[in-house]
Length: 132
Image (cartoon, rainbow, N blue to C red):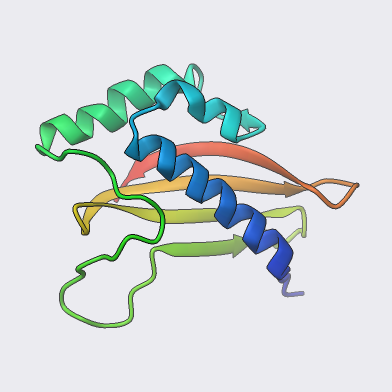
């Protein structure tokens, strides 16, 4: 049975991604835990400071782009930064967002999990930031 994700739940997930990317853009890593309900990463602010900021420093990038910033992807063909993956058991879905910096792919993917709750809400779980 194929599970679909409602527009309302997609919008909730996008808003969470938007908030996290805004915090990444402004380098406010200590505030990211407040944008989700839980994290699979122990000491998330430390992880983000070391990994996210370390990636910026290593690649001489100023900051990661906000959600919806244009991406100068080459060669030109249909490209999507945001991907939804519904769970086959109907318990929720995962979201991957391919991050950019300076409108170029940054080779990092923000990965979040959204679990359906009995009251119709979503439990927002920070999974990781993974290299591509």
